[in-house]
Length: 379
Image 1 (cartoon, helix red, strand yellow):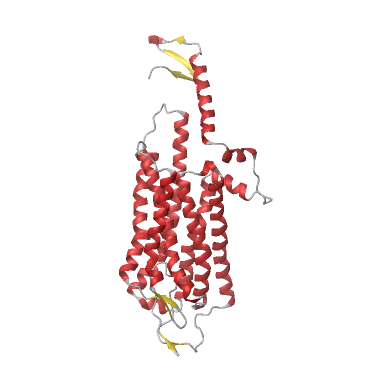
Image 2 (cartoon, rainbow, N blue to C red):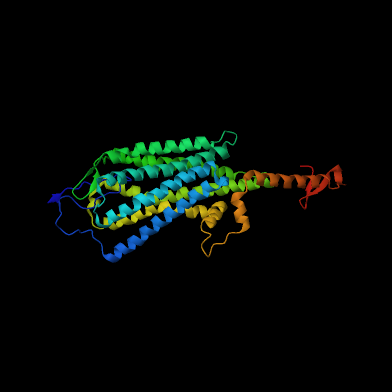
């Protein structure tokens, strides 16, 4: 019996047959790999799944279990972490098993879900990052404008998922079974390009523009020489958050670029899917794309002190993890209490400075000593 396979070339529709048309089903599967090769790919993909699921679930716990971490930015990070963990759990493993032998073992219904879910999760991921970029832009470039409230943030997250479901619906609705493969017949170039624009090019462009303007404001603008210590601390905190998110966005863009290029190239030259070597190319490209789901927790841990402490709390049972009393306090103490302590400290410094004896200087200009350094009253 012979079957005819038409490649599905939609981004997110991972089921891309690499067998050419009119392949005799009685022949040996030419895409079966040696055991050692399968073992290497299995370890590589298992690393993604374990790291992505555990890391992103830990991020969700850090934010939701600690009141101090429940900020607008972090709510979007929860949404991003949920999407990434879901991709690792429900998409990576099954697509790897399919791509290894080019056989689909999981039936039509899961095939529909498998074609449908990746676009939904990718859309939710990248638009969560876009929302963070816009929020940072408003907070830094237009600080007097009202910020998103907790309720408005949750509504926006809901809207993101509704739009994601609408965009991915054709992938589910137009999936039909084949004797040996499950594939999407709605693989028109217009839809493919629209998906790439909506889940890759457009949001990356928006984030590129916003973070460029924010970066210029935070790093290139002149800082007043008499800025307070609190101002410098706030500026440093803003820089750290923006730097962390820029790393997240750049990592996402790099990981998914070869994947989208692969599908665009296949749209104009379907013959590449029928080359035996494309199996290894696809496994490598797909691994890189899926690896984007495991990097964010690592980035948060490396570039954000509170997330680093949160990971230490989560894994304090490990023998090599040490959690100090300061670390415990950092996530538990409310922001207002820290600000009150800072305000009290500042007030005591000012009071000390105002009672310090003055000595007359030339031209009647008085000098005073503040914070252990000599400063002039005139500017």
